Image 1 (cartoon, one colour):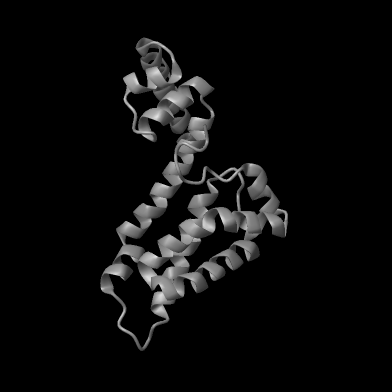
Image 2 (cartoon, rainbow, N blue to C red):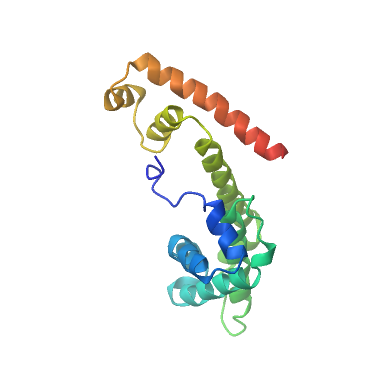
Length: 185
């Protein structure tokens, strides 16, 4: 059920590997998938007019630095890390303008780091969710991302409430174990 969350799922390792291998069509696909998210992120700091220019720089850097991409690691975290650095560069280049202190503080300080960490965490959760059996994944996604109660899930799936509860409990246990294994590895 990849469409439940409403955001692009973790970049397929095959897509990331194609970027690493120099497939320009893979870069275009990554741009179509992640460009709008990165643009919205950049607009929080550099404004609407500059965001598109910085976005181009970000994907140019992705292309030029593709040999540093580790396809086994969350691509989104790496991508947003580049976006954060380029937004800082853009703000620093404004010698003649007053740069909003809050924007710089958010990007350079704890908040900017936390955003990138949240993106990495979300990517790890998506990988762990994808490892669950389909019925457990479906129940968890409907609950947490679809904002449905367990009773609503039971009705929607046509299964007893106890089955939904068991699927969610087993899935959450496996999800936790998968995420913890990912942190150790």
